Image (cartoon, rainbow, N blue to C red; front, side, top):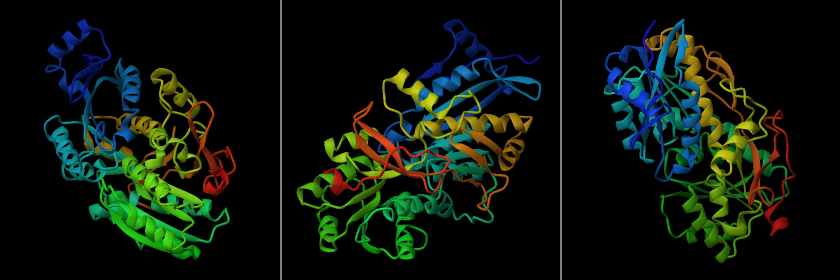
Length: 429
């Protein structure tokens, strides 16, 4: 029987152990002699920086996974300790690539988990170059694949991604827009980053979708993160009588835009924004002027899925998070949990977690149910991509929290229940 080392976790700032102090002392002594019996998993996410909201739930999830793995992991009759090496990308693509290379080459991780849209490109590239299996999420698949010169028919060898595509989120947006009465004039503004460039693509982004449904496209181009003046965009929206405003922005940038829109008397009927409106904190920063704003919903407590690790429903996971942290649930919670479901399942199916080719092959043939829904890399029209669901949501004042994100359009995924009827901003304010 192999010697078992229990529950060692690393982070950039400190070592987090889910064991007693005496056990931790034994660990530090035994780690060198039992190295071959320890599975090492790298976990990369933006704990700080402009994308930190996407990792707000990470400490909760990591602690939960630590408890699940504290007695090791049995694979093919052998028992292994699991060591997690957690790194903060600081919302920097360059740093993400450097940290991924460090975890692969120095720490010799068996599997890399990338829970960060900004890291998904550079970190995945390092995994591909250095032949290490990697799983990523939190980015539309086009923004993950095309900047890496990927081909949807050919894909990659070592890197696997699960999330929705631009075609899915844009369909959700247009489902919401066509369900209400407007003049069909849509003004856009997109942050100048990989996600913004993907949304702004005239080939497969929002401009292409608007053309397909016959809506007017009012283009204001890309803006730089930290922009302090959106007067040019607002003036153009007013001049073109846009009744729908859409785009992708971080919380601080959208807060600036929406404040200036109020000051300059821009009064659209609908505002649908990616990224900034995903989080309660982003809406609360707007005061009462967040009421009625719309966005995509890719996970919520009403999603009808369960965890393959704990058996918890989406609602039970969200309730547990709120009870333990005192914070409102956020959408990344489901995906931060699901990436561990998939990673652990791939290690189990590999038969040998140190055999990177076997782990890679397990991912390539993966079909499983998770707390964010079915994951299928075995039978997908987009190589290395498992698409997940997305529906339309609207922030409304009131309820358990100051704002509640309610499902108002489920046309693209009818298994996810509706929670409210969508209202125009002009009906609310």
